[in-house]
Length: 217
Length: 241
Image (cartoon, rainbow over all chains, first blue to last red):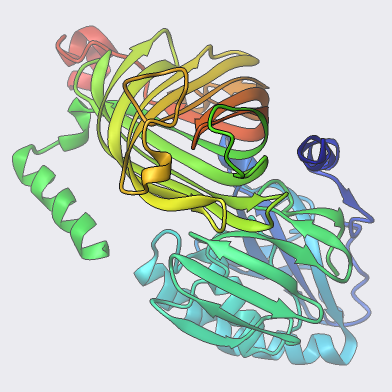
């Protein structure tokens, strides 16, 4: 009976995110940096996502996009960022934090992108490794979703502060784990993430938006 | 690892100027969560009664024929025994196998391999030699997923001859499920994905387990083509210019 209940709960809730962040673009009265992810093309759209940073300085109308395999300027990278599907907004930095984030990303991202595009492989380093490295180097507290496979790539063995900056993680290509106040507890098996996010509360699964529960923010 | 892959690719390229033209195949991936309850104990042992395992199954097949090919696979799952509170795992690598394709995306595979499984406190750790039959049939909104595995256990006396229904193997694991999802023909490649639900049955250490399995499945393949025909017959004149 307990097994049935354990099975039924995720089945009912699979794919559900409560209180997902709105994709409405913030105004250009302040410098804004946004972290978004989109699903890869079909049929792997349910298990793999790709991140990009969208940066718009105060007063500008176009967004500068930083990512692996692309980059450039776009009018609305919140709703349309081909070929990626179903964008999700994970974090926004505005005002003074946005200025700092924009400056750091402009400085750090091109070098990380160049290195990863040269060494690109699966499950890492790849576009999700790029997202995680830029978050950590720029001290931007946010997490990529569980379906961003490669976000926890640290080489053969790696350890350090997690991207949300309230936890630590130890990683190998086979096994890894992450634990922290905002990160919760994650176990990584072949870079598939399973765990529990303490705040906002959710079960972390390597499927769909990467969690069952409240949206990460 | 990367070097090995590059070497294989280079070796293939040396063998043929257009190495991938001759190959066709496909793959499938399952994420699975299985909950099993002990429904009968032939030995009266105090083993696990409730078993939950989460994991994935990644299998592929490739060949030069549109029907017969080689098959490889990797199954990995971990979880726990609810009543005993122990960690449980079940992994298997299938480096040797054959596949037969049916219809547009259907495939049946038979693979042999090596693995390991166990559960702390209730199921002795052991190396297993599994023989696994997989079937993935149907390429529309519905797809039948089925698996039957018999395993021979090396070591772990408590797990020898421990499948009451089959005298020729030590363990039995079977699943049949139905996927409800989508089918695509993007870029000329038949593919699909969707959630599935099914029933699972195991005979393990003298205990019969039955339960449910839920999961997510993806499949993708090259179109089935008779590559023995010349390109102009398959693609028309544009391909032979």
